[in-house]
Length: 366
Image (cartoon, rainbow, N blue to C red):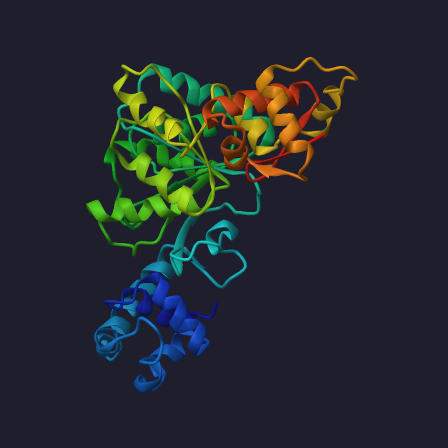
C-alpha cells in the first residue's frame, strides 16, 4: 500500500461513527480510502449504515492531520502496517466481518502458517493450569504452530514463555499502541518476544489501554487463530468473552476441565457443559481434533478387521457410515452424546483406526 493511501486509511480508522464494518463498506463502494474522502456526500449517504453524523465527520480535516502525525511515528519506529486488503494481512482475520481495517506489526514474523493457536485464560493461573500449558506447548512444538496470546498476566505470559522455550513463533496482541506497555512488569520479556515473533495491535502508537480496548483486542485473538484454547477461567472474565467471539466466527474452541469446586476451572467447565468448547485432557486430544497428525504417525494406526467397539463407539461409527464427514457438534446432537464425552469417544475410534479427524472439527470414517 502506498504511503498516501495509508494516510487516508489511518484517517478513516479514526472517523467517529464509522467502525471497521462500515469502513469496509465505504472502501468497497469507493475503491480506495482516499476516494472515500473525495466522494460526493450524497452518494455516500446511499450506503447502508452511513448517516449524516458520519458524513459530517468525514469533512473534518483534523482526522487527516492526526493521520500525518501517526504516519511519521510508523516510519520512525519501523512499524509494519497490515491493511485488510493486502496479501500479508492474516488470512483468518480476513474472514471476520468486524476485523480491523488496519493493524500494526512490530517484529519479524509472518502469518503464513495454517497452524495458529490462541491460548488464553485467567490472570490468576494455578499450578494445574501452568503445568498443562507448559506440557501442551512442549508437545505441540514438533508441529511448529504460531502461538498467540494477549501478553497479560497469568495464562497469557505463560503461553508466550512456553512458546519461546520451545522455539515457537509467538505473537502478543496488545490492547494499546506500541508507545506504551501494559503490564509494565512484562518489559523483561520483550527482547525474547522479538527474537521469536513480536507484537500486533490495531491501536495507534501513543494510545493507552482502556477497558474497552481489551474487549476489542479479544476479537483479534479469537479471529486470527485456527483454534482458541482456554486454560483456566473463573465464571466471568476476558477468556470467556474470547471463547464466545471465537464461536461466533465458527472457530474451534477447546477448554481444560477441572474440579467443580475450583474457582478457576468453573469457566472452562461451563464452556464444556454448554457445548461452547470441546474438552481437552491432554495435548494429544488437541492434536487429534485439529487433525495435525503427521503421515508417519497416521501410518502406525492400522485398521483392524474385527474391532471391538463400545456401545457409544458403535453409535458414532454407524452414524458416520452414512455420511462423507460431519461436524463434532452435529455428531453430538444426532447421537445424543455430550461434546465433552464425544471427544473421548472419537479419539478412541481414531486409535482403533475407525475414524479420522479433519480440520474444522470434522470427522469421517477411515
